[in-house]
Length: 449
Image (cartoon, rainbow, N blue to C red):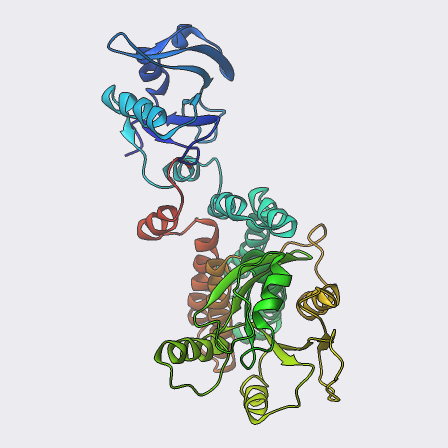
């Protein structure tokens, strides 16, 4: 329902200095005026802040600052009221409860942003960028999200659709006026080159998308090795905290220990796995089985070897198991005397205990995945998994149109594939999105956003 007024707590729940309760809808000011003891809100100018108290049944609830934003120059393009009250779960919920009693409806997750989209204030990529900003974990991921919010992704998709529409229009003219162009001439010398040009543009976007996805979501990173080679010490050194238990007893790490770090804008979602070896200990065996699964799922392997031990059969098995993965060999415990005389591609010597060599490891990781090719300032990167999937679908439709041309099918059959591609691109920006898709997307937003 777009004709009602919604309300929800927009700040994080919990103790804090300030909490924010937000309303949006035609009656937002009217409802707020019923419970606000202060200035008459129905007579104030837009984008103004007012001091007063929230009262209910002559009972003083809280001292507040209340902001009024009048349509259409608001986030949702509707009247919006924001009540800044004292932080705390009870007082914010009490104010929300009063607003609901006075005629507002509790907002669904993401409903404020959904209204901004449905009212034409933002497109679907900008709506998704709002959530990306909230979830950003680094300067690079924040810059990426802001490009989406600024409409850069929207412009990219609109340009692709404009090129595609020009091809479709050319075909339509031929269908309406058959004498206008020779069909073979139209297909091979006019339509086909333009489709190939579109394919090149989309493939270039998808090639850069891998960088964007890394910047946004980070890398699932598994730290593996035999028991007691220093995996947990390495995790602690990277995290700059003692999160994993470190002892000289083999098999101390019996489960999965997780953490995240920011390395030059790349988020490593670290997983310290139990040492992989044959074991009769049931609990340890479960941890080992988990570790093998994680190796298969990991995007980066940090394979730890002990500087004071020669390679064993277990090491060789792990080397074989991870040979096709993105992998860095870490020779640990270099603070001790004996050295391993083995050479590996992408290797680094460290002392996790004394935190030496960690900076060199971080440089290798950054170079391996970004290679100095990422420039957020000059380029726009597709990072949203849904957008990437839709671009892949668009490629399929465009390739199908080329097959139709090669098979000498009627030009209107080629047009069907091109229109499918045009609709698919439209789903990225919300121009051709179904109601069920929108409901699913906005349900992932937090309450009050």
